[in-house]
Length: 232
Image: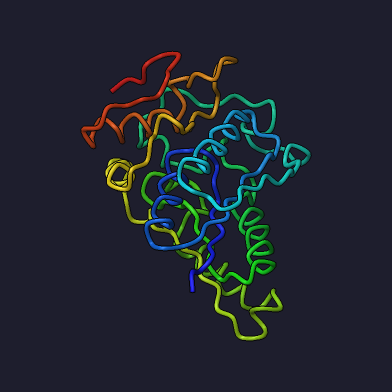
């Protein structure tokens, strides 16, 4: 019997790779994107493209107004940092951190999984390239699995939920190589935090710089349309 997995799909490089990984692993995938008031809402179009290209059985978009609580450069009128090196990115929790975002997203994914009789969630957390984000750590993922066992009817009745994080120990070049091996067309994806009105990536935010490094060090041509090419 084919198992169903709920895959968090932002439309970025990491989540697209996760969807390809889940499909290659034999899962029937239901993808879940969030319209949460993010300034880079163009990623929702990318998520729809990726879901279609990689064979999502059902792509859903949930609307949440995280802008109502603010606290992040992605949901409030705060400046997105540009031109930082990776040491600066990892020095402190960045202003692009959205308060409790992964907790909220996984909670919704958990609820959807329960309605589908699924116990498998797939998410693109990565402890190497996103070391400044507390909700991208293995400890967070294991704690959420423990919560799922206590907070759901399925869990109380004995189901064991698993949050698969296939990218957790990979650096960005490793993620790109994995995705290429699985047939991901990264031209369909979007990663920039502060895109131009026409959708081009800014080239200077942390996400653009990490993405560009990934392609460069993986030896894979970068298909991203940049407003300004990221510095090497």
